[in-house]
Amino acid sequence: MKHEPAPIQPIIPAIGIDGLLFPIEKLKAHQDGTLHLAVSVFVFCGPNLLIQKRAKSKYHCGGLWANTCCTHPHWNEAPESSASRRLHEELGIKLELKAAQVIEYYAEVSNNLIEHERVQVFRADVPQQNLDFNLAPDEVADIRWTDVRELKLDAIANPQNYAPWFKIYLKRWSELGL
Image (cartoon, rainbow, N blue to C red; front, top):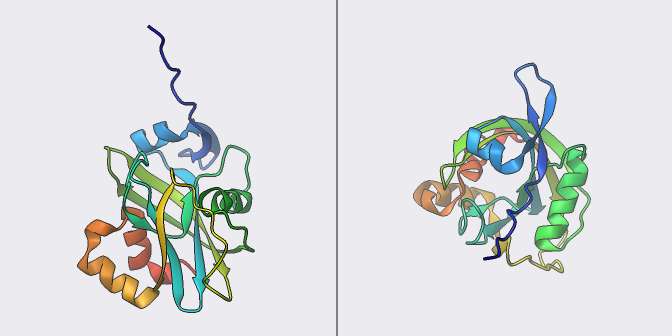
């Protein structure tokens, strides 16, 4: 009987109690709730934000709506490089990103995993909504543009449709520096 090797987990930067970074496997960080670095991207066209519905096959929060994209920097990868890389990997687009605020949060997500993240937030502004997207189907099920005010109301009325961290972002919107 042939055994398939376990998938290799990316090594990401975690933050020790001394404030120093150390490498950790992404899945282990989420299993243990270890504070680690992350990036989140928000793409705007005027008052409208591009949001994505995570692919159902994702290891947590599949089928839920979230911000444009988010990820974890690889060990020794700069946050801006990580954000640009993931925007291209998930949505097939390359945009000029501007750093906003850093926000920290803790959220229990699906499959008994925990997001305990210090997130560098990035913003991009585009003049039109019809970008040349190339969605990665194993990452993104759908995308849509939505007015931020309407989005906040819908997240309150239908919280089951949104990823836990995205609901935190919407509640703490003024802290994001967007």
